[in-house]
Image: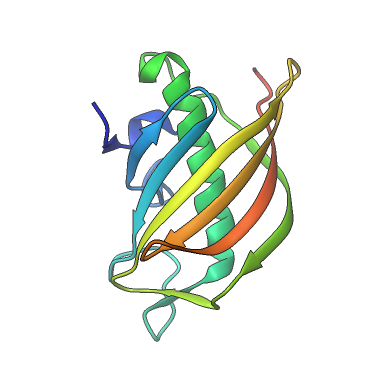
Length: 141
């Protein structure tokens, strides 16, 4: 069934829905795709996006994971909040128009009170270019 458009599985509307597709998803991980186009949000005058926006790509990939695992989109995706990012590292400063990014998120911990922790990475051309750990909260979990 995958890949599939990510938007039905996330509580984000355009233009803030930044993830294009869910490539793979299971009970622990999700792999998503982001294609940087001339219409992408957050482009600067040089047609680049700061690699710091990668944190939002990771967070939205975690949201897509949650929504996909929440009865495969048959119920509304739960709202979540990014509480923190730890150990964000990147090998580059920008994403550029034409880049196809693969974002991988793995849920390390999900508590009954709605707190979750994710190990995340962003790949470009088959090489990991950014990593981080995210802490998120879903108030109605």
